[in-house]
Image 1: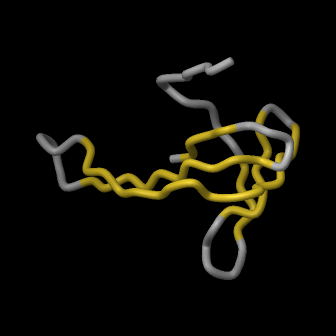
Image 2: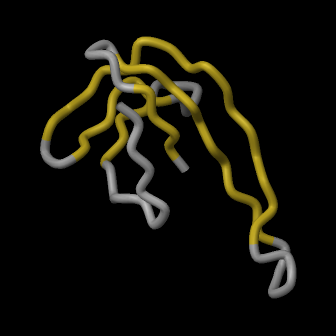
Length: 69
């Protein structure tokens, strides 16, 4: 089942030496990252200022497909 949280939820992320996620904690549970499917950068709030947001679409070892921003 797919769920979308348009406003997101905070997560704690553990990064490797290259700045890529190894695992993240969501709702108090750590999820090891099995692979990164895609990453991209998008410009947001273009009318107010030049703001870029990085996104990672990844799959976890326990089968979650997530987008982290």
